[in-house]
Amino acid sequence: MDDVREKLRTYITHELIRDPGYTLKDDEEIITGGLIDSFALAELAVYIEGEFDVYIPDPDLTVAKMNTLNQIYDRVMRDLAL
Amino acid sequence: MRLLPTGETLALPASDNSPAIIYLETGQEPITITRADLNREVERYGAVLAQSGIKPRDLVIIAHVQNLESIYAFWGTLLIGAVPSMFPTLTEKLDRQKYMDSMALLVKHSEARAVLTTVDFAPEMRAIVGCDVFDSEQLSAYVTQPGVYHTPSPEEIAFLQHSSGTTGLQKGVALSHRAVLNQLASYSDALGLATDDVIVSWLPLYHDMGLIAGFLLPLVLGIPLVLMSPFDWVQHPAMLLKAIDTYGGTFCWLPNFAYNHCARRIRKGDIEGLDLSHVRAYINCSEPVRHSSHQLFLERFEHLGVRAGQLAVSYAMAENTFAVTQTPIGEPANQHTVDRHMLENERRAVNSDAPGALVQVSCGPAIAGVDVCAVDEQGQPLPERHVGEIAIKSNCMLTGYYKRPDLNAHIFTEEGWYLTGDMGYIANGEVYIVGRKKDLIISGGKNVYPQDIEAIVNTIDGVHPGRTVVFGVPDEREGTELIAVIAETSITDKDEQQTIIRNIRRTIAEQTTITATYVSLVDRQWLLKTSSGKIARAAIRDKWLAERP
Image (cartoon, rainbow over all chains, first blue to last red):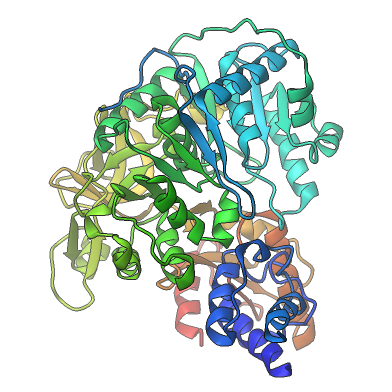
């Protein structure tokens, strides 16, 4: 399961933050911390669907629910664990 | 049937049971507000405001989230002849205290009479602003009697909209009833707006495109408006196309980045089976238009009925109420492929089919009542296809910047032209925009002054004060400019540098509405200065672009 977390971390740092050298912490606030714009949530949803075949419904795609790697990971795992 | 505004002052059409606004929110049932509902609520808000002592011509700031209450507050204020102004919304990432402070400053400088806000914001705002604060509960709880309404003269200020301006120097663009009605008449004519049109908008009401095209135009002319919040839409872009399908949307205004956002970030399953063929136009406005963004949108949504003839363009600005130009509806916007070297160095648009030539998309001809030309540095009109500053004269111009005599002395040239700060050329009577005169960055539809961000970064520990530079990096993928921040530091420890970078990102997010994409720390003396000691922004940008991995 750790590879899901690392895939998400790599995607966020490389594609969304656009800084591969950035050390993103698990509980770091990605959107309110100014690392990515809230626009990127929609992009993350496209990635998660393509990579993990997990569809995150719109009501779950919010800054409050998807602001840290932990939150994003937990949300993906909720569906993958089924 | 074609639509034109009636009357000499802004007003809503008479009550009936037709839908005025359909408000959409993710996870909620759609709310339909009929014209009767709208007029009833607006009258109630107006009566409460009048009873609370708000007088004609008082400035009333609306600091709300984008919802129906903010709409009633705007129109209620207008109804009693007071002057409403929509203030940007507090977002999840903006620092709350900073927001309250900037509101207090605005109230002070603009001599606002009252702030209308949410129940949530009201207590803090009351403590900090020097005027009355009314929350939504107060405004709806009052037992009211019909108010006595002031009928303004057409030359009176109807409302203020915010122009771009550096922090602390908010420029309220004051527009008269006559100017706004002239704009609505000319613009609806240019669009051929008719009774069966439906406008769909996610745009913020504190921006001219949202307030005029995505709000006043449908409400005043009496056609349905399907509205959502910008914050909801950016996170859930498919809701726009679903709304166009469900409600038969025919017009939709979008800044350039939104074409990329929709094309790249809408999930396949979210739009299966939608029919967008009835759309008369998506109108690209308020950011430089990119041919590649139109192409991306077209390719992604062609199977749903999107066609090149739907992709229209407008050039607009708050000072002209809104639209200056509009390409003909139903036809693809004209475009030129021009020689890059000739454009940049000779300042002329010369057709070219050589590799590396630039595609310039037309913004169309001026709408009725507006004259437009390109002028040289002496203010003299230039021949066609010569690049100069775009200048306009119109019957829908601002009256002035509200309470800003310092600015109002210089709004127009001696010949009465308004100089826009945009650089462009005219060809066959159509306007083509090629850039900006100043350092303004337009990122995601928002105007960003690099100086504002630099001032914020200069206060961060570890950054050498006065040694920060901010510039825009055009990004093909996003269809807009991204923000780069380069700051000098003496700190060499990598962990400490990461902490500084985190602080820079967080502080920008909390104090502005933008997110910095690229943040780099550099050694002392990395930043280039001009011979007069100023930061050489353009040269630094070139150096950074050349050196970046």
